[in-house]
Amino acid sequence: MAWKIELGNSVVYGICDGSVARDPLEYLIGSTSADWAMHADALDQAGLMVNSFTCYLFDTGSDLVLIDTGFGANAPEGMAAGYMPDELASVGVSASDIQHVVFTHLHPDHILGSLDANQDPFFVNATHWTLKREVDHWHATDDQRAPRVLSVVEVLEGAGVLNPTDEPTPVLAGVERIATYGHSPGHTSIRLSGGGDEVIVTGDLTWSPVQADHPEWTSPFDGDPAEAAATRARFLDEVTASGTPFLAGHHPQPGFGRIVSTGDGRQYEALPVSDA
Ligand SMILES: [Zn+2]
Image (tube, rainbow, N blue to C red):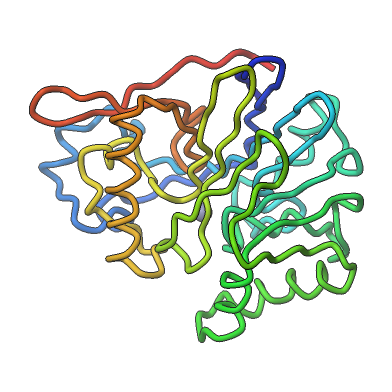
């Protein structure tokens, strides 16, 4: 079910492509059973960490911007994912309506939905934004995901719709990219603003609300664990000081919240969303 938050006259829709449930000890390296006993509310009834695959549709009134695409038509067999096209349709948007697709980074769960089942571009009228350093990384790495990632890059390049930039320049007014390298070499977060309000789409900076007080816990998908942890710690310091709310696509739905100080630490505070 899609949901929304409003920023002035602009609207951010949460478009959930699906989710998986994972062993928290395996997927947040550094955490212990004792830690999770204190954070049982962050796990499901089976004691697993639920990771959503959430994309965000930003409607400024004049432009439609999609941040990340989930797996879409290319969801792995057996995974509860691939719902992005239906979720878009549920808010009255078709793929051809979208002018900009912004990738936080080029991991498969963020880009495979940009192709249809025939491996052609799905968002036929959209410019697809990423960073050159992110594309360069996938050409240079022996990561086993690289062939699949590059297959998407090559289709988008071939169609002339990929726009890899040197710097994380703004996409348009109210859609500003922020360098948050570490999870991947060209990982960016996206600041959305409207009507004096703002929210940050964090990409893969955090995987669970419990990382609010444990930025050192890394995911096995953090490409450079030390840099990812340092970037996460810096981001959490900044949003604790500023109070800026953020949208974390891999947190359980809806994943909209902020960080508050608790005296001896800090904690994640969920914020409400509306039905779309
Ligand atoms: Zn991810």
